[in-house]
Amino acid sequence: MRTFNYSALKGVKWDSDILGLIAAIYKEAGKQEMCLKQSPEKLDKLIEIAKVQSTEASNAIEGILTTSTRIRQLVEERTTPRNRDEQEIAGYRDALNIIHENFDAIPVTRNYILQLHKVLYSHMSNPMAGKTKNVQNYISASYTDGRSEILFTPLAPFETPEALDRICEEYARVTGNAEAEPLIVIPVFIHDFLCIHPFNDGNGRMSRLLTALLLYQNGFYVGRYISLEAKIAKNKELYYDALRRSQNGWHVGEEDPVPFIKYLLGTILAAYRDFDDRFALVETKLSAEETVRRATLQKIGRFKKQDIREMCPSLSISSVEGALRKLVAAGELKREGVGKSICYYRLK
Image (cartoon, rainbow, N blue to C red; front, side, top):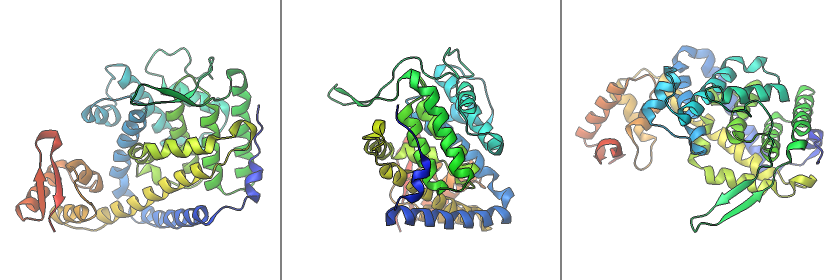
């Protein structure tokens, strides 16, 4: 089995792209901290929206789906799941809530990772919930012409428990001793976790839960307010491509983690910049119409009512709808489509 040594990250000469991303994230994190001190009560709605989006998106990446209405009911009202997909969604909701509320009291160890996995499957009967895999798994790709291809073979089941222990120990040691930049160590840990692929099922969702946990523990709270999972889902081809390019040579310790590091840091930075935009709309005392107008000015091309609602968490859905109607009547927006396909775009 390959060895893990995160101390080696300290001596790596990272390129200007990675260094630039790290510097920009720290700058944005500092700005966010000021926002949280100024108006913490105004951001509660952002947290609610992010939880719904994160739960929906992380499951949708794996093909686990339900309606938008049911997602909100499952997350916001904690309603009882009706089928297998909703059971999996409810499990993700519960695991995410545990991380949001207790991230500073969850050590990064194999035992706690197994407990989170057990929570992920707590609404269904899964004999492997909270246990490492008992069969060899593979990372595969399926193509439109019917072909399938094995892209990567993770560690064998018998190697998995020790490998999980090793990456947790290495992560704890280098972050605890400040031996390496956390924004480098976190993507490397998540990448190793995905290469180990420790569970029969749920590896992708667990990797996204762990990403949130590690970021929060290191003072990067953007995922509480802007869904990182939604950003990954929106560009999941880029996510899979970065993962594939970084996996080459992993088994013998010759992988290049740079593509995955850049991908994850870019996603984090994009989320921070979204937070800036949304906080500006929350912080400024404006009429509903002007708040929605300013939100639409940040959109390029077509957008839906839900896109604007997410940008204006202080407004009710009826206020957003009313403001959109006024902007259409004033000739600022064009509305097209019917029913669920209704969308808008700016005319000036």
